[in-house]
Length: 115
Image 1 (cartoon, one colour):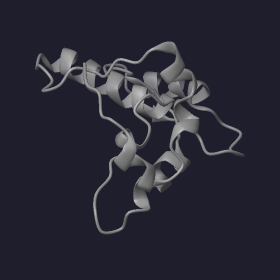
Image 2 (cartoon, helix red, strand yellow; image 1 turned 120 degrees about the horizontal axis):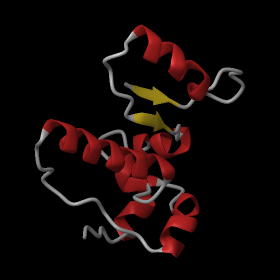
Image 3 (tube, one colour; image 1 turned 45 degrees about the vertical axis):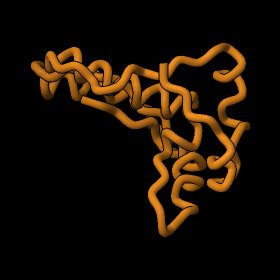
């Protein structure tokens, strides 16, 4: 199971409901909690005529890192090898990831690095 972080203002968090799901579905595996990133998704959606992935908007945001970790976990559990390695980032890239790109147009100037 994959849980999603609740929207702001929702009093129930994923950690409080995880035990209830574990009781109801004892053979299931919990993959984690996906953080919400409405700004990152909205920036990716700015370009209406072409597809821009939210992962390309901010490669090292909490949301993107969670997606990369989820893919790695699913690949490991199913015994398959992912086509690309998870991108790596230094401490400064991780610290300032959410501030780096505010508009989809900024993506044209960003180099894509996959290690």
